[in-house]
Amino acid sequence: MRRLLCVVLLVALTASAPAAQPAAWLLRAARVFDGVSVVPHTDWVVLVRGERIEAAGADIRPPADAEVIELPGMTLMPGLIEGHSHLFLHPYNETSWDEQVLHEPLALRTARATVAARATLLAGFTTVRDLGTEGAGFADVGLKQAIEQGIVPGPRMLVATRALVATGAYGPKGFEPGVAVPQGAEEADGPGLVSAVRRQIGSGADIVKLYADYRWRPGEPSRPTFSEAEMRAAVEAAHSAGRLVAAHAHTAEGMRRATLAGVDTIEHGDEGTTEVFHLMQQHGVVYCPTLAATEAIARYRGWNGTDPPPAMVLQSRHAFALARAAHVILCVGGDVGVFPHGENARELEAMAAAGMPAAQVLVAATSGNARSFHLDDRLGRIAAGMLADLVAVEGDPLSDIGAVRRVRFVMKGGQVYLRPGPATR
Image (cartoon, rainbow, N blue to C red):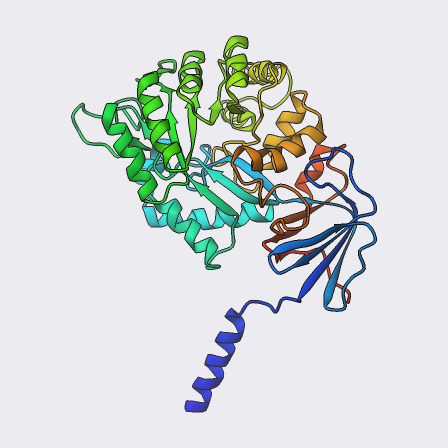
């Protein structure tokens, strides 16, 4: 009996042990996009040792201890960075936002988030900026820790925890006034907003997210919520703690206030004007248009994806064009969770379809997002010393952005999560 138990234990330990890693990897693809140049390198190989890139370029011979992975016909590039995600949400055509916030148990939402994290990683997005758990409290902090500890596979996470809204300005709504209803974010105002910023940072927030505007009642248009002074105090508290600030803002006035208050990024911005985008450019504020989420919601309401698009899609594309014309720094982030995790590439495709050259979209989704999120000292480029977050896609995404969907190889921190076939020594 004791012998049988020992055999069972040995099998269990072997099954749970990670696969042995070689001392080094040499990756050879048809072309290498380094995250910066819009012209791919056709003679490069990339050498990875441990969790970092040791060398990248031509004429690199494979060391004797390296395992070679051939990636024929593929483009090797930095891991993509998702700029606006909600891993604790799933598509609204499956379950409405209200139902998710009010009726889905936290354990269920967390279990689903682990699956969403894995799908995101295998789609080639090795880092995400997750902008709010939408009623799931600080569960994103725990998910981030689980990924870092290797308990579940997933991307690197920058988390915003609960996010911050003005009292009465968020949801769910539609209940007897005075009845306490769980909210999708933390309510705070005035001096209490600074306290809430510090509380969220103390609980694990990497990012502070403010809702600069929202619908005060169902069916109403978005209107500004926080004053410029309130947001300025919140931004000062966040920046003092070394955290960046993201602002949800659809209206031009919400965007204006957020920009003058000193936020780092503005999300959505569908009603942005030429004047407000020029103001953002002058202040160095990054714009994350979330085109894919707008298109997804339009589809849920009956749009079939063909021309003519509905007014909401035209408006978001117009704002995107105004931002590009004003030379605003662009973030690539789709508001994933509104549509399925793992389909993050939809935002890249939407930006290209709206007129941004594919190569510029790829730069924005790698070194651009890394710079905007202050990660450019370790992510977003293929260069010696950078973390080995690398992805290979079939084809050439610099000319055909749709190639980003054809992910065949994923490495994060030197650990291979997806590979096309057997390797050679």
